Image (cartoon, rainbow, N blue to C red; front, side):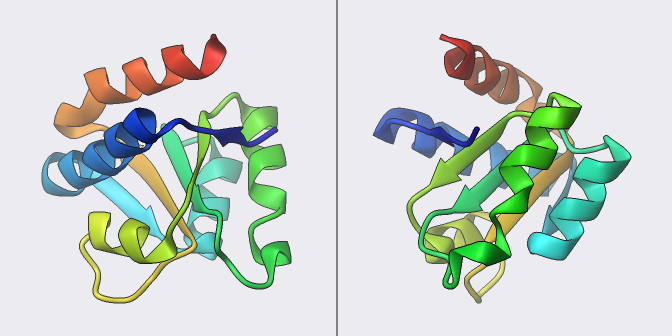
Length: 114
């Protein structure tokens, strides 16, 4: 199911998104993230916990689990939007090309397995 990360891991998720935005590729928004998960191109997916209504993102953890993609829940859609480099809140971000965040994503995925 969805992984509720501790504070230090959440910070790593935001950092991974920021680094991937600068050096790789990310997709913002629930629809874009869903498409990337279905194609199997997403490397890491972050979902905001405060999405309203929650049904908007409910399918994402299940899809990600099916495809073996790490899926982390973060507390704030505002912070998620800021990490993605946009001025509006976003419910979901998918990293599709790691760029220089490859090691960070690996650390996050390893921590989730514990």
